[in-house]
Figure (tube, rainbow, N blue to C red):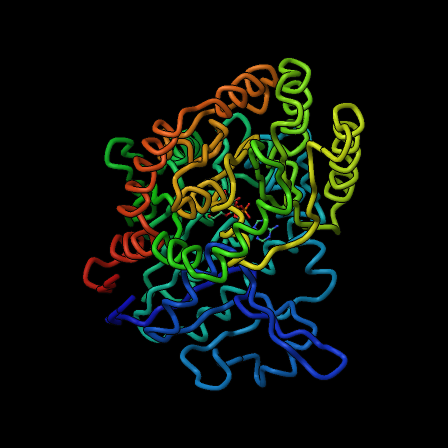
Length: 481
Ligand code: ADQ
């Protein structure tokens, strides 16, 4: 990637791209994996700039005198500005308000959402902390690119402090329909916070429509242009648009074609499969929005309805623990184990266990190798902003033999329309689609993958960044791929 800087860039995220952790022998830095970091880190390394994020690593303070950590340490290309939070702030802002309130609400799982009166002022003040840091570190007329539901108030708070800055904010998760949004006692404040941006990005047009409707229904003084996706608000125009996030398809293709990952990929098939068996995979953070339990229920249904399929598939589920400070996440992990055990007890025989579980994070190269190795992938989110796993699976399928089964309610389904769609609320239908997938002729598998791969080549992760930054300032950046 080649990029040319015209205006300075300031990225703002909750999670930091690099955390420094204390070890017995000193400190080591851990790169936080995930789509956003892997898109923005190379960009900032190329063009330089500033990144403001919560300093959550145990050794962060030691490696960042004055709260600034050069990245990379040896040959600095950009500055990471760490915002430090007290345990009370982490609890109120992150665990409670963001993860127990906004996260389930945005995924329309209303019965799980709790908005604590005590957490709200903490959420607000932590957003203020981030905004002050951005205001302090940004050079004149910089572009600010802030992210997600943890930082909804940042756009307006930054604007108040630094009217010279241009601000884009991207909301990575679904935006709830108005009757659901209204259940949040502070929804008006959240809308006002986001309307401080010049460009407000969502994953899909459905999200954009839901946001614009909410603004229209809430503020008489806002003028909403649904057709052109603008809001006129406090003498400014806010552009509200969908920018579906994507993956670096070329990089994935290159990784999986290396001799090392090719060997690994063949090896995992040899280890897990007997001749004639097909390998299914799923990869998720252990989050209730990902529909892991409904997927296991659909698998049980599948073996009940199609007993002739017993012994024909091995399903590998990779589940990585997440947000273990929240009770619902701890119990989910337990439920996954119980359901998996039940399926293996009921249907397994001889040395065949239908479901194999890997409870940890795989390094990125191997994860892509696993996607290459698979005959099918199950993505069964209840709701999902996008779901990068679906796009990674399609990108890694260079042998073109895998079938993607994708939940209709994941944002990715709007683009990957050559996938087989499933509903996590319909176990019988899910099971029938899985049966269909296993018998899908190779030619059709190839055709479907080719269509989706072409789409991903036309809409890469770098297009996503470029589209948002050029919407903010059409003259600001030239990014070549
Ligand atoms: P997430 O909810 O985290 O992201 P997702 O889009 O699937 O969900 O991204 C997860 C990333 O973590 C993927 O790159 C995946 O490969 C990786 N990952 C998951 N499990 C892993 C494991 N066990 N080991 C290693 N890596 C693992 C939020 C929204 C999504 C939206 C993204 C980006 O919820 O809807 O797509 O942001 O905008």
